[in-house]
Length: 178
Length: 138
Image (cartoon, rainbow over all chains, first blue to last red; front, top):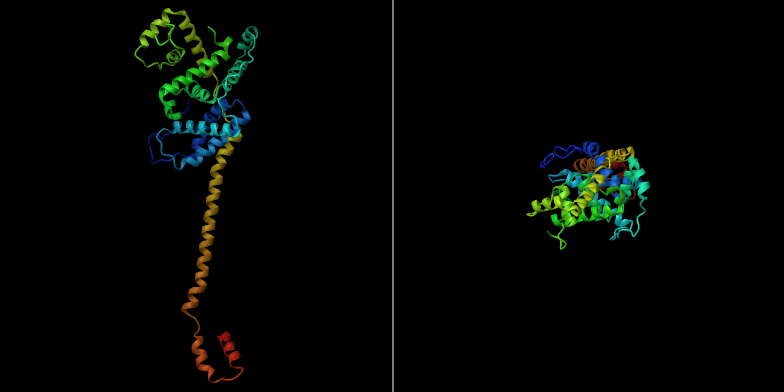
């Protein structure tokens, strides 16, 4: 996890842009990749996010820089989805091509392949579930923090995380069975 | 508890996996999971999902993203410099124009007085030309 910029709660000191890039470019790119599942899309999304952050930096007044960063990332992600006409209630696919359990066992030995399968399953989630799961399981944010970032009540956050995980549980069946 | 079947709902189990199940029946839920294999299995699977997602590694942003981000600042600086230059140039032009106009007003040649003084002496068709010549000479 990254070290937060020393600006929490301070409204007087603006973060230096080079410092922001050095500390958060990887965070933004990782989130972008997990949300899109594509290196090209992640690169474009990251660049757009960083551009927005730079534009907003002079007016930045919030106390929680990372919350603002996550919110900006997710808003940019949604805007790009809208532009590509993909923002609709994406129903879970009827069929998700999972390997057979025998193949799955072999693939589970290959960490990289397992990660790829997990990533593929993640991008099949509806965007609102994907965002909640990424913030919780990848970024380690609490339900309360996620509620503030997404501007949602705690109950809705809990529900989205659960629905996302439940869908992933079905998609990743052989990998998650105890 | 919160499920008609007597089991814990998956949503509560998911929150339990996060340690975020902040509700009065949490102790009951923990006790139930300890005795109910169905809920225990589900809790295990949801926890595994959590670990699989959490196990995805952090990535390093490509150089193109970094350089693009850093160039935003330099572009801004260049834009700022261009604005500064434009403002300076505009200011210089205004001052120059002002410089042309103001001294002329303050030290304008007394043409009217000159004409008045000489028009009587050089009355006739050439008077105007001489006056002009005299002004230019001055």
